[in-house]
Structure formats: C-alpha cells, structure tokens
Length: 316
Image 1 (cartoon, rainbow, N blue to C red):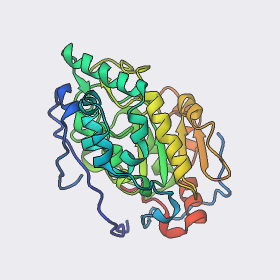
Image 2 (image 1 turned 180 degrees about the vertical axis):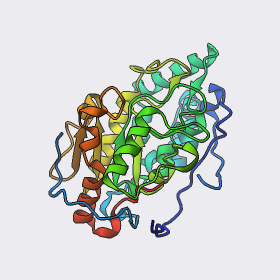
Image 3 (image 1 turned 90 degrees about the horizontal axis):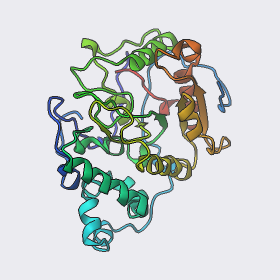
Image 4 (image 1 turned 90 degrees about the vertical axis):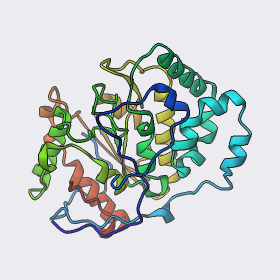
C-alpha cells in the first residue's frame, strides 16, 4: 500500500488505556502531547482503483472565524463560567473554540456542565477520560474536515472510548460495528487490511480529515445512553451546522442508521455530499451496509470536487 504524503502534523492525544480520570479533571484537564497521537447526493459513483491517497488540507475552502481573541473571550467569562468551561478552554482545538465560543456560554451548555459536576459529586465514572472528550477537534481541526462520520453514544466500558466515534484504543479489540466497517472496507478495497493485533484505533482517519463525531460526547461507565438528553445532542448539532456552513466547498457526511440520518436532514445537498445507510451494527448491517459503497463513493466525490490528491486513504 502506498505511503501517505506527509502533511502538517495535528496535535493529538492518546490516553493511557488503562486509566480513567475523575470528573474533576473536566475543569482542569490540559492535554499532554503524545508521540502518535440508501440515498446519495454525489454526482458520480465511479470508484478509485486503490486505497492510495494524498491527504492534503483544503483550508482555502473553509470560511475562517475572524478576530477571535481567546484571552479576551476568557476574560469576559464569569467566575462560574471559567470554572465550568476549563475543559473546553484547555482542550478544544483553537479553530473549534473560535467557532463554538458563543455556544459554550448558552444556558443549555452550562447546565450540561453542571450535570457533569453532579456526576462527579456522586462518584460516577464518566467516559471517555476528560482529556479525550474533544479529541475529535484536535485531531480534525475545522479547516481540515473532508468527511464527517456520525456516531451515537460513546462506548461505555473501560479502555474503549477515546473521543472518536466507532474507534477504540489498543489493546481493546474492535467492537462488532467496527468489525463490520472493516468488512465493508475490504469489500470495496480488496487491498484493505484491518489493523494488526486485532486493534480498532481510527486516529489515522481523524488525522487525514475524517471527523468522527458522536451524538453524545460522554457517558456513565457501564450505562449506555446515560448522558443522553443532557445537552450534548444540541451541542453536536451545532458542530455539524458549523461544518456545513464553514466548509463552503463541501464535505462528505456519512450517516449510518436512522438517528444519524435525521441529523443530516438540513444539510444542503447542492454543496455537500450526504450518504445514508443502515447502521453497521450486527442487528442491521446485513440489510444493506455491506453494499453501500460509502468509502469509494466518498473518494469519488472528493476526487471530483477537489482533485485526486484530496481523497482519503482508509488504510490503518
């Protein structure tokens, strides 16, 4: 498989998969850099012959936030807001903090952060570790987004969730949905090989412009959907809206399953490519996911819109 052309490095974090942090770190977490860190709106569905791709930034197609002064914004916060928003101040990528700063001070989001304080006070373990809640923003800055893959709830067992939808850190083996994603990729690209040693870390995709965004960004350990309805859904809807608005030349949205499909209903198909399919979970994948060809259709659209050097290398 061909090597990926080097691109500007994105600051990223890989947590210790054996540890979780107390929720108090939601207010003081400071990232520490590591060494690594169906309906189709596309105009054509011809597929590239190999996985080879050059993943260059296409920042010229992104409307950049203007005149955002982080220090001035932080100084404008009330003492409570500064306390509640320390995680966002410290760990959101600057491009996303600039785009989301007004959202962070809305009553619903501050209420969400107070809920997380209450979880901590009740000694609830919250996943992913605080430093990884916004890993998707650091690995895929706003001006590098080419593809958005929408997930749902973070994995709720230890040593799984690390801030990227569908992804798990080693040594956790790929969960069933991710195994089906790999199976679909192998059907579309015969030279695709799943990660060695039974791993399921999708960090490389995120670094190449594939934003892996969950509907909710936190969950109580061993309790699926326990943080649903607390405000994350509204926040991540805003994230999607920002991509749709700021990436003015278009990106690809991959919506798997009914909940994800609803989240892309308002996306402008004249600008963006929206691909829908059933969810890759074992309960539904056999009803069309393996035949969706979303990975090759994504690259066909990116190649047509931006040129062949902008397609995604799906190798891991």
